[in-house]
Each structure stands twice: as structure tokens, then as C-alpha cells.
Amino acid sequence: MTTQQETLLVVEDEDLARKNLVHILEREGYAVVGVESGEKAVGLLKERPFDLVLTDFKMGRVDGLQVLEKCRALQPHVEVILITGYATVDIAVKSMKDGAFYCIAKPYKIDQVRKIVREALIKRRLQLENERLREELQRSRPMPALIGKSQAMEKIRDTIRQVAPSDTNILILGESGTGKEIVAKAIHLLSNRQSKRFVAFNCGSFTEELMANELFGHEKGAFTGADREHAGLLEVAEGGTVFLDEIGDMPFSMQIKLLRVMQERELMRVGGVNPVPVNVRFLAATHRDLHEDARTGQFRQDLYYRLNVITIHIPPLAQRREDIPLLAQRFLVRIAGEMKKEVNAIDAEVMDLLSGYSWPGNVRELENVIERAVALATTPTIGVDQLPDHLCNLTIETYRSSGDAIPTMEEQEKHYIEWVLQKTDGNKTQAAKIMGIDRVSLWRKLKRYGWDES
Image (cartoon, one colour):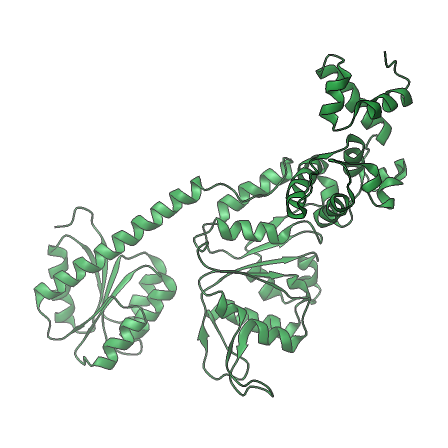
């Protein structure tokens, strides 16, 4: 007898055979449901979970292999045992290839059925235990680097932790350069697919023909120069995650093909006649208002709703200015290491300029500015001289062009110096060290603001 009651589904169109098998399994302590057709079995699979399905092979309109196929689609982890009076090697190989646990030939022995059922359920329990352990590991796994202490970034991190373990499609929205691909990678790394590949594809970088070839692959002879078959990115990512960047730029005809892949979990290579099964999770991103595009007919509504199960919106950098110092420092450490340069600090005045700028290019533009500054730096501290002209020449109007009421550079710097001096009890040598400047530079700033340097 089992210590935990598991639920079994018996599918058999012969009344006596079905009732006998149900009776045998119930005596073993299982909860057993018996139905006389594949159609009824599929209906039950849509309504409630089962641990194991035992199905006759030869039935009416829906046979055992079709029940097996529906099990894989509706309840991927349920174990399936096929029972057939027409046992052949071909049937056995086909059923096992399609995911059956075992193929039993009629007439079967009761002890044989009991043994195979026990083995199938042991496998099922191990799968459930592995899933539970993976979920525990998921919860304890640290979040991949998403830099920022703003409320918006905290919310994004919380959302990623919640949705990553599922296979739900996710739409990531945000301006160019906000870090949509980084968010997608974080979702993948915290998902159950993290051991498989993460494949990114930019939908705005290819012609329609190249896009079809890159995503779906092609058969040998599909076009001039196709001297061998080629697996597309969707096949390459099997078991993993596909990130479709700038999905809003995908041509209509490609949207139709992508929708079919999502619905049918199979694709057709260019020049192919046989569908290829695919098992991937889709993440998509765009800077466009995809809801409006779908409403006005510029993007397929059915694909939009298929992609937009969960939405993550990344605000522009100008709306989360408290993240700028952290991002700048992280870029500094990484880029200086890559360039093998002893640059380890950012001047306070530079940080004020960075914090006040509107950043139309978002995080990517900030990274480029830091890379330029490190490349030009001749001292351990990045100064104003290493910044591009448009940052050096900022005015108060520039600061406020984004709509935020931000203090001027002078006001920010004065407050910062005052705060540092307060923390160091007026020790200017220590204050200069904290600010990443020398004592002479601090003296010049104090003189500029009319403070006594004595």
C-alpha cells in the first residue's frame, strides 16, 4: 500500500477490462478514475491533475498515442503507460519516443502492471522532489546584478523573482538603453531553464527573409546557396529562453509565423515540409507603445496578447536619478579593470553633472560616458575634463528640461561639501579624500563659495 494516495486515470474502451484494472489499482491504495474513451480522458486532463495515466492503444477517434500527446501538452510531468493488444516494436519505440513510461502488451500479468505502476510513480515522486528542491534553490539564489536602489528597481527585482520560475511569456517595456536585455537575462538565470541557452535576437536588425532564416532555419536546397540544413535560433535555444528585442519592429508576416510557434510549439524551417517541435520560453521587449500599435493595427492583437501575459516596465534613467551614482561606480570598476587602468574614483563635481543630466540614451549612454572618461583619465579620479562637452556645459535649463525640479550644480556641490565637512568634523584633508579630490581642489571650491579656508 502507498503512504500517499496518488491519482490514476485508466482509459479503456472495454468495460470488463477497465473495471478489472480500476479494481486492481484501487486495492493498491490509489485513487483511480476510469473512462471508456480518449475524448473523455482529454476532457479530464483539462480539468484536474493526475499522477499517472494508463491508456489502451486501440480506441475510437482518440487513440492511446493521442492521449499521450495531450498528456505531454496539458500535464507535461504526468507519467503515461500504454496498454496494447497490438504490441509491435514500432509501437513500443514510437510510444517511448513520445514520452511514455512503458508499453505493456496484452494479455498482461497483474503483478507486471503493479510493478510498472509503482516504478512510474516513483519516477513521478522524484520529479516532484526535484522540482521542490529547484524552487527552494530558486528562492535562495541571489538576484543577478540589476544595479539600483530606487523604488522602481526594487519593484522590478521583486517582479522578476515572482515570475522567473514560471514559463509565462513576459513583455519588457522601456526606452532604448534602459537595460531590457539585462532584465531578460535575470529572468532566465532565475528560471528553471537557466541551465539551457539564452538566445537574444533583435527584430529590427534584419530583413524579413533573413529574419525567417535566422529564427526558423532552413532545409538543404531551400534557396540558392543552401547546401546543407541549418537550425534556426529557436531550435538552438531548445529548452532555454528566447529574447526577442524590439518585437514591435517585426514584419506582419513574421508575426503570424511566430504566433504559430507559440501556439503549436513547433516551427517550419524555410523550405521545409515537416514541422520541428520546439520547447522554449519567450521574452520580448520593445521601446514602442505596443498596446497602441495593436489597437491601431500596426501590430497583431493576437500576438500582443500572447506576449503580454506579464509586463515589466523599466523607467528611463532620468526618472530614477538615485541609481546614477551606483551605476556610474559599477561601470567605473568594470571598465577600469578591462582597460587595466588605475582609475578608481569619480570627482564630486562630475557626479553632480551625471546626476543632473537628462540621459536621453539612458543607462547605455551613461556607460559610454564612463568608458570615455576612463580612457581619457590620467589620474585615479575622473574629472570634468574627461567628460564630453555637452555634459560640461550643462545649465540650469538643461537640468530642468526633463521636468524634474533639480538643484543647480553649485547648490548640489555646496550641499555635498557641507555634508562631508560635517561628517569629518571640519577635517579638510579627510573630506578631500572622501570626495576623491586633493586638498588644493577642495580649497578652490571653498574659496569659490566664499567659505573661510582657515
